[in-house]
Amino acid sequence: MKQIIISGGNLLTGTINIGGAKNSAVALVPASLLSDEKVTISNIPKISDIEALTEILEYLGADISLENDVIKIDSSSVENKEIPENVSKKLRASYYFMSALLGKYKHVEMYFPGGCAIGARPIDQTLKGFRALGATVIEENNKFKIFADELKGAHVYLDMPSVGATINTMLVAVRATGGTIIENAAREPEIVSVANFLNSMGARITGAGTSKIKIIGVEKMTSGFSEVIPDRIEAGTYIIAGAVMGHNLTVANIIPEHIENLIQKLKEMGVPITVDSTSVTVSRANSLKPISVRTAGYPGFPTDLQQPLTVLLSMAEGVSKLEETIYENRFQNVKYLNKMGADIDVSSQRVIKIKGPTKYKGGTVMATDLRAGACMIIAALTTNKKTFIDKAEHILRGYENIEDKLKNVGVNIEIVDI
Ligand code: EPU
Image 1 (cartoon, rainbow, N blue to C red):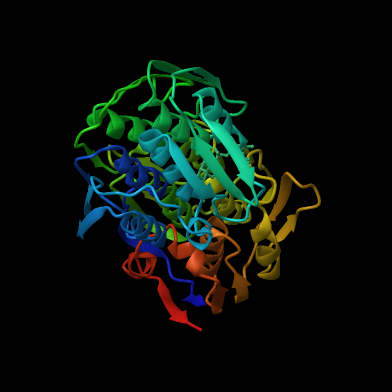
Image 2: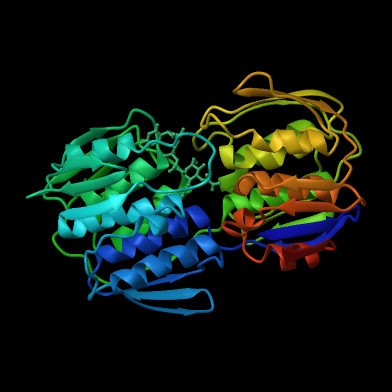
């Protein structure tokens, strides 16, 4: 097990450069399979989720080269093999292989994907998309057999704007015959990045970034290129850290419009923040106002920043309210924040009430999931007592070089194997 040890109390100052977006890159890598020619993706983040996906691609027979942050993938000799359950269970994004293989070969056999344990996370909308496009889905013991004689474009209405179902439906529809319309599609920037990448490979997709995406299927996909967009959740995490413990902390290489939701909430609390074209500079405020926050699909407040934000809310004078509308089990961080000294009421399943201001003390806590781990790190930054964060491997799934990035701005942090 990996453990992060932090002796906080220092103000964070300097610059943190943001890497490529995990939730874009984890879709782009499997999407590359749809082409029979070499594709290139730059600004690939160095995170363990990407390592897991490239291992799957190699297992399937793709030829991969990774140099610095540029990956080149040649899928011309890929074999449509079953991906072992212990591999697909490692992460959520393994199910993008389900759609890419189905789109390319009209047949796939795969197990239910993994991912952070933050709710049930069913895949019914993805399967609904596959069925609408003409596939038969047989589920047996956690395994899905999905096949079609012909994939035909269709009108697909998603019951909720699911990121995964939108991308999965796109990955199949680009290779179906005729046109597809996805209604109530997710509008996240990561969806736009996947559509742009597919279009660079010869797909015909319009409307990505709106709730109606139109796709005209093509027979062949060629070489393509993408530069992974900046990770808005990594950026948001460090900006929140800066609002909690920063002194002119600059978070650079970002697209500020992608985190407008966060910036507005920080301004509402009284956080000193200046926004430039590709960076944000933030400092700790003398006093913070309590606010209410409700998570929602993009452009609403991201669920992935809810747990990191909780620490900032706990610094405000008074009671803040945080409502989680996307996942039914994304407050596992609260138990550990309370252990460190917070006063957070979690008696209602979807709403927590955070009473501040809080003076955190260290101790041993746990990263129950990726963003809960980020939340623990931010709480640990505030106290000069040592904090030990167990199960830190969850954090390394989505935050590249976190040790160096935080050390460079003045944090005493180390990652050890225990
Ligand atoms: N949902 C269903 N049925 C479906 C699909 C989704 O009921 O078929 C529900 C889910 O259970 C959830 C909600 O709809 O309650 C939203 O799920 P969505 O499909 O949008 O999420 P996802 O694609 O599984 C991605 C990110 C998550 C991020 C969400 C929302 C990846 C690999 N994961 O998950 O990222 O929280 O979108 O923005 O892209 C993270 O990075 O920490 C993380 C969890």
